[in-house]
Length: 323
Image (cartoon, rainbow, N blue to C red; front, top):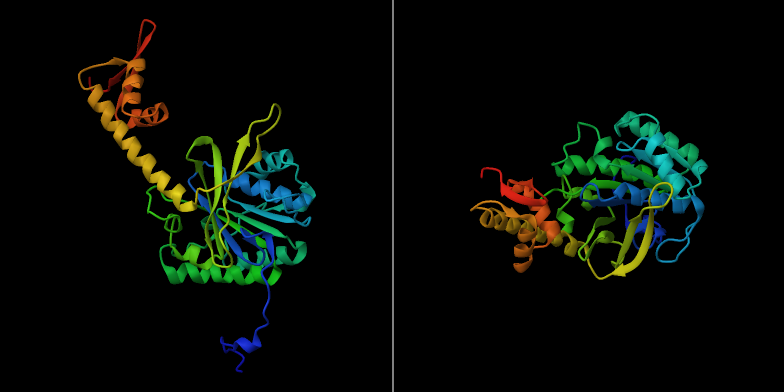
């Protein structure tokens, strides 16, 4: 075989089983994409999983991970005032967590620095928050060949050193029918990843979050996990797991579309019911309930509809801005 020949026969390749950090969600030696709408706590979830790894603690399914090291690469959270306090509250072994104390781009120079870190400190888990923040500006996020080439180089590096990798990506605003198409940028990001996960609000309880699998091309998809970010009497909130649910990633993606259509219906309702003049807010809520529009949906639609609140005596009124 020629030295620069990129092809091999299967007979030359040694078969191996997949090694899992959390089966079948997060494999070692491969990149897992974690995505969802902004402000849902994706980073918080990653820190929680990282803390479990540093302690060698149990995962939500009851399995225990081997105690290991974590490399947390973040462009969104400050290590001193955010990452350390959160990880400390979660009980992480801080001596096992290394963070990026500067900013790098995963170009040739950045990948050399990343390789040195993997070589010297052998993390078992790498978190990249967010993925696009560290890609070179030469990478065209909408061009399949460009994004695949960039991610392939990173994948080769992680495969060589063996950590599990979680890379965070945001969802776009508009629904696309299936969760696999919802991420910002090219579908090829999901194409390169072996597994992909999504975080979304629980359809029946807005205080709960669901972790669902979007893609798994190395195993069967499990039931989705439910968790809650719970405030503590002292210190920062922590994550508590609440079992599993039948809601799939596609169910949760469609929920986003349903929320948008419900809000549009609420906007239309407000403009119609207030067209003749102000009404007491209590009466607006009663009329909305009669047509099955919830109070949270009504409050979200209020600004879009151009509704203002005005107090007269002890009563709050809602009115259209132009009336």
